[in-house]
Image (cartoon, rainbow, N blue to C red; front, side, top):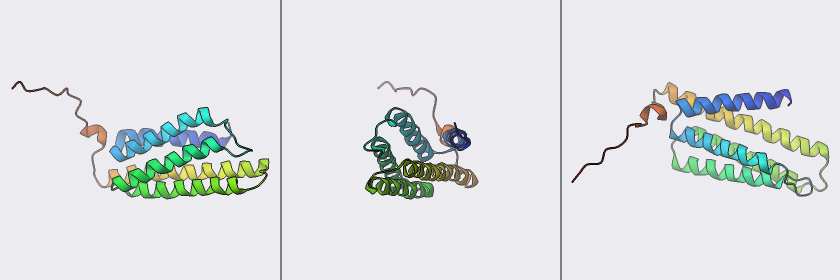
Length: 154
């Protein structure tokens, strides 16, 4: 594992834990989208089409759809940033797909570009959690009602 991969993994785990424990429902949805995409990409990373990572492009398209849905349904600014960054990832996929006869160097450049943008997505999620904390909003974990609901007998 390269140092950047280690950094990316550690940053992701720290931000996901922070967003899950200190974020609201929107931040938790963002964590769920990213974790699901990560798990699916572990299986799909070996699917290629003439050097183009078609399965990863489909997963990134689903991430774009998830963040776009969050941006349209919720009132958090970081979802707009994450959606814009997901559009950039799709642009990187499009450029790679439209490149005839991909070389190993072009494939590495595509992966590096998408990973760099991925770091920005993670940082936008972290900034959303920090902004929520600075605004004094309670995290979703404190708002949860963990007591079983009693039904009234009528």
